[in-house]
Amino acid sequence: MSAGVVFQEALRILNRQQFPEASRRDLLAVLEAALPGPLALLYDAGAEAGLPRHTLLARAAAIYIKYSTVNLCDDLSDGDCTYLSDPVRIGPCAQFLLQNLFFHLLVDLDLPKSVLSAVTYDIVVGAGLQDMELRTSQWTAPLYCEVADGIAGRQWAAYLQILWHGTPLAERAATIGMNLGRAVLGWEDIASADPRFTTLIEADQHEVVAWATTAAEALRQEHLQCLDAVLRTIDPVLEKKGKIT
Image (cartoon, rainbow, N blue to C red):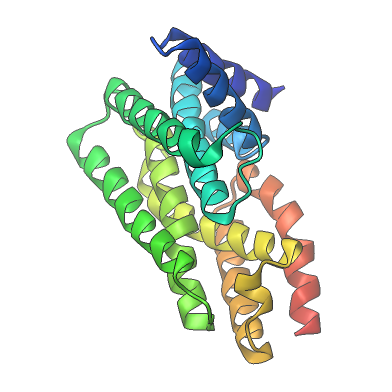
């Protein structure tokens, strides 16, 4: 239910925009392709921080739109964008529309300049490391960790700084976000047998598992229910792979 209300808010935002109907249909497909994504976590994290419902939904929906933009970028790069009729021509335009919609929403969230500067910096650095990922054919543990910090750690640092601004958790947002991105990407890559991980030599796989496990343990020490829910999914995969490696 919590994930659903955030997604419905993202749809309301989309429907308020003056986009051509064909564009609206394509953007809906992009939002649906990213499901379930971080919807439940965003809602639970906002609720645990004590955000009023309207603020929580506005911030979480804006973040989900950004998340969907990143997901589209990944799919276009990997040739996995099967939900648009002509991804080579339409995909870049859809990404351009959603990216600009996110920044429009970000301004409307009325965040202070210091938060906007930190968030956009993390997004820019993360985008640069996405480019590094696409150009990498041979992975090592140090390179994996560097790229993961950009495409996942900084992404989540930005998301939580947006979500938790003005709450008691605001000062912890960047650190928690970095560790969350590290743990989640490590878990996802192991579970999906992503070449980023599977092409590593055994010693480097062990190093990456230990790195992600350390991040997960740091999350555990935050004593937040929203993170505990994520760890219940992550822990078994990291623990099993740790024993194998």
